[in-house]
Image (cartoon, rainbow, N blue to C red):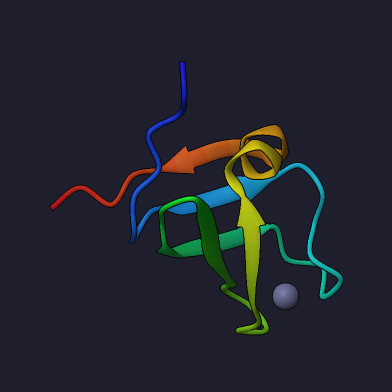
Length: 63
Ligand SMILES: [Zn+2]
């Protein structure tokens, strides 16, 4: 069952970004996901499979 991940959600990864932060904001969804490091602002593309493996926690952006 795939995880529900939407634009605006915050994800916490098991492995931190090289800048030391492990909190990312989802900015694009689809075949691949785009997420932005909330500390250094760098955006990275990641496949769903890889992203799901790396996620420790998702904080939904409830509107
Ligand atoms: Zn970073």
